[in-house]
Amino acid sequence: MEMKIALLAGDGIGPEVMAQAVKVVDAVAKKFGHNISYTEGKVGATAIDHTGLPYPEETHQVCLDADAILFGAIGDPKYDNDPKAKVRPEQGLLLMRKMLGLFSNVRPTFTFPSLLHKSPLKRERIEGTDLVFLRELTGGIYFGEPRGRNEQGTVAFDTCVYSVEEIERLARMGFDFAMKRRKHLTCVDKANVLATSRLWRETVQRLAPEYPEVTVEYEFVDAVAMRLVQWPKAYDVLITENLFGDILTDEASVISGSMGLMPSASLGTVNKLFEPIHGSYPQAAGKDIANPLAMVLSAAMMFEYAFGMQDEADAISDAVNSSLEHGVVTEDISEGGKAYKTSEVGDWLATKVLAKEPAQ
Ligand code: IPM
Ligand code: MN
Image 1 (cartoon, rainbow, N blue to C red):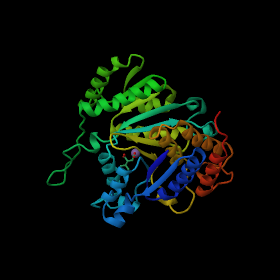
Image 2: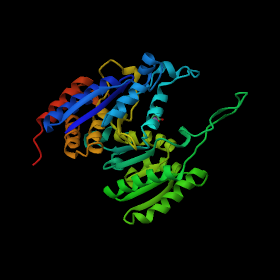
Image 3: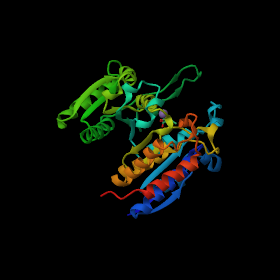
Image 4: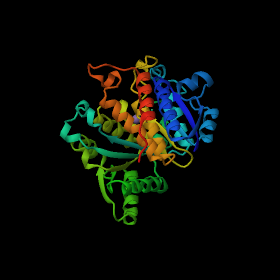
């Protein structure tokens, strides 16, 4: 099959981890006989430096023309320390989500058998955790108007807005995910306080009879924050609004032991984008030490969700599991053992994918 992939490496460690994902994708293409072409686009601080804009029109065109988008990371400390900066790298990410209609951010949390001891949580609590968040990504307080300050600058405000349509499309995707998994859906909200949350709950309740096999639970966001670390195995599919999802998915990511491990997919109306959930880790940029696994696993999600190619996705996840078992890992998880370079892990994974016996 012919596939056109947009590569938006972004800032910090983005380009380094992206290079490893490309090696692995190339290996998959060779192994399974696909024809893949890449087009690069600038985004984030790198794009601001070159064009003055965090998500230039050129990059948007690259995304529109591609069958799927791989995204590295965004963010540069030189903007973080300047609260008055007019353009910020993060605006690029938000604009891109909106312009590409990426309304659902799929963030799985699972554990790797060989890394259970790395988690800050006790083994018996986390072993076998397998949950997925669907975070609404183009609405809520991230985008609601009005936002800003009063004339004196002494009062600031943001607005959380949700329409039934926005909630319904995300909720339906949640029900569909649940049907393909353990048929359990949790609607995470703050319906005891927020009007938007009450609309979320009402909408999910209205849809539930259409999915009689799915058990639906409604839970307040504060309780979920607690139960996620007490007993993450309670969850299968969780749906929630933009801000709650942002916070809870960072919390959930530590269950697996390292932020450098978890991939994500952003699905929507125009295209599909795949990115690690970690940030740009500027302290490590250019040092060839960052963990490329979340980026590589994001490429696996691309094969699954953008191209419906489960074998290709599995070939990548199997190679990743194997690298962990063989201790071919970067310094964040090497624990006194040999710390491999980012590029060495990428080479090892690509070789592993190529060496894999074809499935019978
Ligand atoms: C994320 C990030 C972004 C968000 C930032 C960089 C705007 O934290 O992808 O989770 O808050 O959505
Ligand atoms: Mn976040």
